[in-house]
Image (cartoon, rainbow, N blue to C red):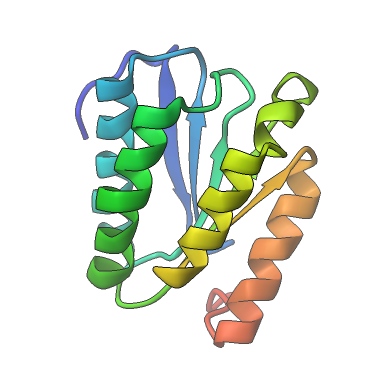
Length: 147
């Protein structure tokens, strides 16, 4: 994993939950945000092609149009192909991000995601986000072996 400053980004795989957790701890320029996604994909592959991600956006601005286009057009299609199935992503966002998360542009992004085997949803509560990921694991028959 590239050396991101500990105060900028953290990544952990929770084997007990079968979930990859990425947390941006501050704003980062788009090239660095892109690199964090590449690192998450590599970590997911290392952990049995983990397709259940919790991504905490609360301390970083929601992406702008260029980063959203990169994610939609280049990164998302690659993820499903490389992990062997759809990606389920629970995004944690704060009240200050609600308007962007509920915008028409984001709605279009979310609809497009489903066409490329990517299923993102926004949450403001981590327990609800984890419950949704757990439900998706159960539906896919992919609950962690400790259950």
